[in-house]
Length: 76
Image 1 (spheres, rainbow, N blue to C red):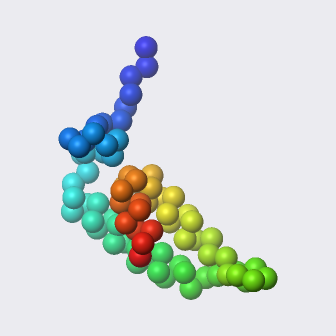
Image 2 (image 1 turned 60 degrees about the horizontal axis):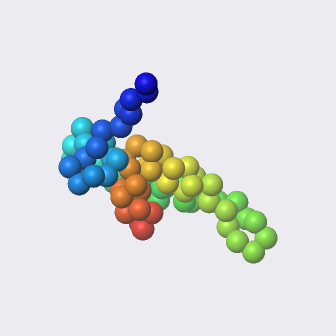
């Protein structure tokens, strides 16, 4: 029988509880700064601008830091 490898936090979310708050904050701020720098790279698509690195960073934040941190990083 397969066992789940995810660790449940105290509040019941599936985010890893072994990562400290300082580490999450540092990684979150790093990804926000990286997203800002890479937002200077854009490709014109007829009526809009395409920012492909923004989607990559949002995916990486969602995987590495969890859902709630990903939503907060999306706002900046």
